Image (cartoon, rainbow, N blue to C red; front, side, top):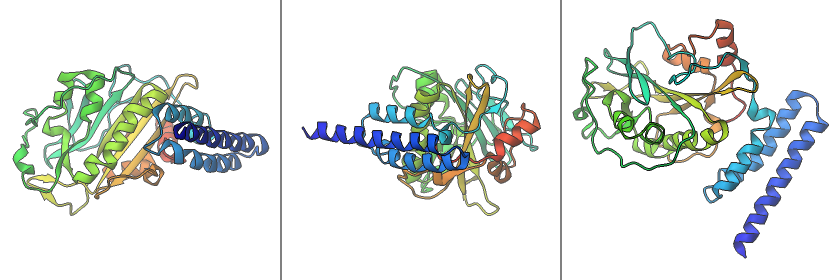
Length: 313
């Protein structure tokens, strides 16, 4: 009986939220007012869909509802269909330092041997069969790099060996051999345990589970931000922040949209309000010196990269 009442409570809350959204759309024709009404309605919905006790089927339904709002659909920037099978939709991030491009079965890396660290990892996820593969027990020196960073650099450092391209997402989309390649140390950076096993993992899981269900194919670029005085673990610098740039192509509207997250490197197990970490892609470019979507015309890049998503997807 209690489960039925709880479910009816969810239905009532969902219904009220839908009414708020509909009233906002029909009673207010001015776009800023529409967005304000939808934001308040989504705030209510989020209390349910971000609650860890909410059943998956309810979360999927709420995601579908929220994705129909102006707030979540966002401005789709007209663009050609992305490169088929590419790990980045319109070219890997570029800079002027001559990064080494390491291509793996399920992801690629821009590696800087002089630092030595990865500046970015790129991967593409898509609908998959959720087969849980055993996690490899070892990390591997990447002999394609000159630095040849080993696990010795991390011993008793106080930091996890944090994946950029994540083990789980690559395993379910590309298989065991690709999963093993995520354990190349060229794909690893020092990361505090609470962040690695907590908030950062939550965002990774959100992408491969909820974003894939909602959007189908999703591209992710991920990397570290280093300060002028970043501390080091052995030779490897410790990031001050971590970023993600996530994009999906809307075939109906024939355009691309993207969102960027910037997360401080601090002990953070959980945070259900991911919107606090949303920034513009241009902010990430400024912090890292990278250029995203280099194959797009500059005017298209400017439109896509200068806007800040109204809230987390």
